[in-house]
Image 1 (cartoon, rainbow, N blue to C red):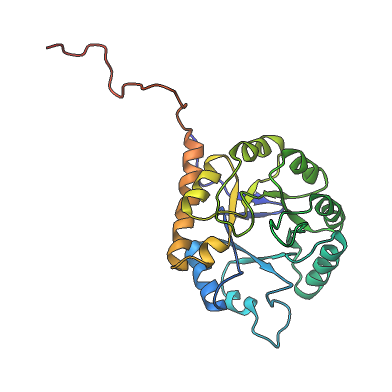
Image 2 (image 1 turned 135 degrees about the horizontal axis):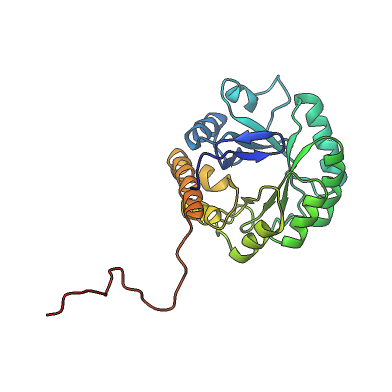
Length: 262
């Protein structure tokens, strides 16, 4: 029998929650904290170029979570080259001691915010050798996903749709192909717009879902955080249970043999 109790394993860490949240686009740090706790996520991504977690003389997001079990996942949002990301993470590790990172290198900064997979591969290889646990944001290309695994990524994070678009998974087949292609966890990232998007990602076999804008920009971030929490659990349960095959015709729900005739 399948079980929902199996933890998510990334590198040398384990997590009970399969929902990861972001920290951007909230109106303030208190709302960030409240929504994160409501989501029951155990990991929150932080763009270290945009959100303060290193300067103790300014309002620091770390202070809000210091008594929680939520772990920080620094990300390299804003970086466009491998060298930038490598330098950023080395400095961040020196300041915070955190070596669990989300590698994000954007190729098109104006319209699609699509990742530059070439620069991402370069940085992944260097950072993995440097002792970082790399969760790599990438396109929904199974070939690139395999290359990232070979480069040392501890998890691969294919986009569902462009960042912040809320379009949901645009190519369900590719997510399934990536899951089949690699052994490290697959975390669907970017483009999730509502709870049903998260459930679909998990039903496709994703190991986890990361969402930020869908919660932070919702009319009620706390309620949406709870919805995402429940959707990820339901999607995981549905995946483990095994859906029925799709058919082009009807099948009677009740047996026809032995039916009483009038």
